[in-house]
Image (cartoon, rainbow, N blue to C red; front, side, top):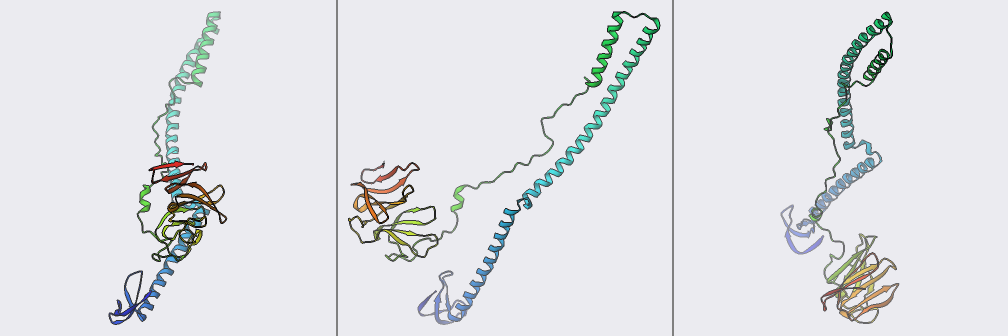
Length: 315
């Protein structure tokens, strides 16, 4: 909140008073109403914090007990219904199979009775020879096979499932949707200047594994590191004024970190050189190059864009 120079109309009480400007809502409040306004904002913050804590608790509970998730409950319900449907179908198929088997057994039984009469007749007439014995033996064998493997009955598998499958599909939103939100300032925001909480024509940036931001602060001729959620940065290269000494920079345009030796590599554009800073020691890597952008691949090759020659070179 910043105090206004002249009396203005308070947004709440609508009276001409010395007012204070709220950066959040861009309205003017007198001291009394400003206090009330701040209390309202504080209460809203407490409410949001409470909701955030509740949400965090929900996340923790779902991580510890994923079986309680609504999605798992839906799968469980699908399983119960599917098993019930299978059991109903299985019972229906069993009943049909029993009826078919009974019919087949009755047919075999009739054949057996007929064969039994033939055997009795053969015994009675005492006319037994190899031909009769082979015939009786083959008939008995055929009936045995038919009883164990009835040719008229078989199971035909239907390739079309009668159970509705429920594949789990993870919906992916287009990546560009995540940029459609309000941005937040993570470095600077305090106007043009050379203080540690300011930037002056920042150009290239690099984010390290700790989420720290390295900024090529061009017109301040320095490289500044802003740690995650920091209110100001710290100078890690340059900062000794514009110049061409090893400890100076001249309009740096880009910066990267060499993960192999944790050194800082800088496109020192104004001095037409690529320079390496490591533990306050400097070394010029590339001379006489109109360098602007830097990149390094996973194999440690360094890529530099050369504005004057309109090309990108690899070292």
